[in-house]
Length: 287
Image 1 (cartoon, rainbow, N blue to C red):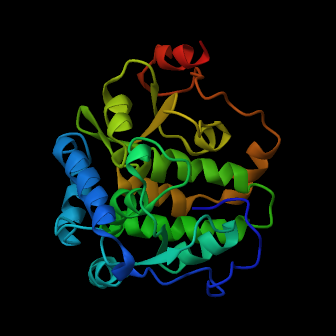
Image 2: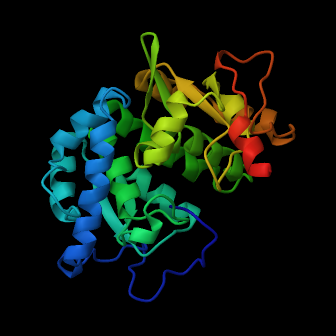
């Protein structure tokens, strides 16, 4: 939910960029769109998504139908892990985003996609933000990781490395995979809220699936216009949190600041490779 935005909040927003959700203004058609997306994703995610995600759906009562009321959702999240969901008018500046995460507030757009945008839209909507992100915020370890990421973003805000730190968010929170025994599972919000990518990320032979390495991830470019060419696999939320809390990011930033970026499709000799992808999908896109 970050982007190149003006530094002052838009008209009608508070100083922290939050706005009322205005849940009562949603139309029956908008609630029906949520229900359509919800049914499609929950019908195919069992056995593919990390169990903590499905547990979070239950904890938050998200099967009740219609776009969730952020006040009700926040009450349930607060009881589980101390988090809240707050509405914002769109993309927010980096510092605003990090400030909210550091204080256990997840910012969410309040609009929902149209039928024409069923499978793709450029700016995240309420389905991506709430269905994709909120369930895992009910998991205590993952919730702590998100807060730690926000705190790290605030510390890094003036260092010139936010672009590198954004890659950590992209390849974990948005497009991460997790290993459970001999199987890989989905947990990234950008995948679990997308019907097509929920299949592609696990089943398609095209992408690389690589073991998570902090510096490697922060040097790797990513795609914003299509499915990812590489996905990074964590061993557990506990390990991800431990690496975030125990790492001195100062030397990490120093090491990667002048280092060359790594291409989206690259496999390095040092990588722990789960799948060496064919990259056939990316080649098709290039024509």
